[in-house]
Amino acid sequence: MLSLLKPLSAFCFFGILLASCSQAPAPVLCPGEGQAHPSRAKNVQDSTPRSSGHGENWHAPDFGSSYAGSPIVDTNCLVSETSFPFSHVQVCVDSLLAAGNVEAAIPLLRMVVNSQNSLDDVGRNSILLARLLYRQGRTQEAATVLESFQVFKPQILAWMDSAEALDARMRQDAELRAQETHSLAKQISNLMVVKSNYRLVRSLTDSLRTFALSDSLRNWSLLQDSIALSRGVELLRTDLGRIHQLVWEAGKYDSARVLLARVQQSPPEALALLGVDSISAWIAKQETTDVAARDPKFWKTHDPQKVLTEARQLKTQAKWEAAAKLLQKLLQTSLRKEARQELSMVGEQYCTQSRQTAAEKFSKYRKDHKPQGLQVAVNALDRCLELFPETSARSKIIQNRALLVQEQSKMNSAGTP
Image 1 (cartoon, rainbow, N blue to C red):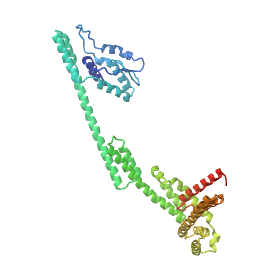
Image 2 (image 1 turned 90 degrees about the vertical axis):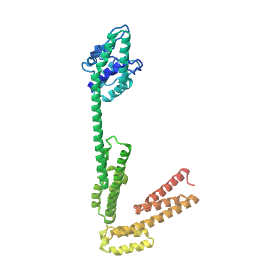
Image 3 (image 1 turned 45 degrees about the horizontal axis):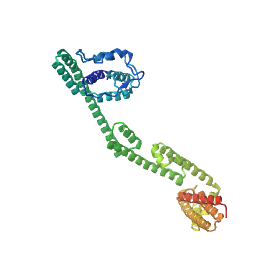
Image 4 (image 1 turned 180 degrees about the vertical axis):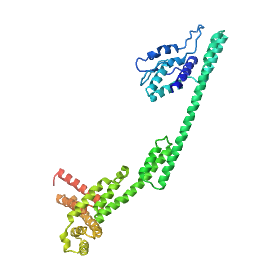
């Protein structure tokens, strides 16, 4: 890199010297006092072209000697608004590159490249200057100008060789990247066909997105992530259904916990969508309830099938709590599944009646403003949630209860009539 910068600096400096209509670029100051490093002071001075306009001969600067010595190690260069010698920019660039600060060196080099004249300008102005000197009879000076310009020929050829080599390398790298992205995209497509798990798909899509992708390819990779995640979530839903079945219908709590532990190894993105965190507590609660309902003495004198028949009769008589009590006992028998189904129906009917009671009491309260009726309504909903916490109307009941409690708060704030 540094070997390329030296001929570049010579070319740009020569363009500044010969182009009469070029615009002066924004100057650059290295940190410190804004001066070139002492080890370069003499070289910078020697690299400044001299022409008094009185016929003195001037020579192309020896740019190779301008970079002798170790570069200073600075981490920043400051841009000011006054003119500057290009050699000072080179000092800054060298310092930044020596410090490994490539990102800071790039803007400086870009500024220099964009602000200098083209090679055509250098050649045209060199020949024009030589022709004018020749017409003035200053043949020796004209020859010196031409000779000074001609020394750039091997440098220009070297630049072109370097540019072609870099271009070839860039094309080769781009081709390799294209091959890698194509390979990754093909692997992802194959995984999607066989419905591979989300983690495997995501690992490849993440690798693919490390490349500079087109918007369409990047969006395609994100879509594959979404599809794979959705598939994974559906599989987890099946596992969660199995966990519910093991607990709810079979009472196999240990098996349910083993399956839950496997589910919890799934990607966090999927777990977050399913609310898995609360399942472990739910299993523990159901187990505690079942243990509390065990009554070995009861079953020494009762037949499970007859108890189920009795519970169904109580349900038809709207004796919900008595029916629920028997059904809870049946959960410890071989009729657990049937008991769960009956218990679910009893709960729906009981909670429907509780909501009707709460609605009637609330409507009456709106007319007579008696707080006792409002409390009866709240108690009815509380009893439903206590006896049947798994009711499908749970969320609606909780909302209704919140409205009733809010009304109680208003009543207490205003004072009882």
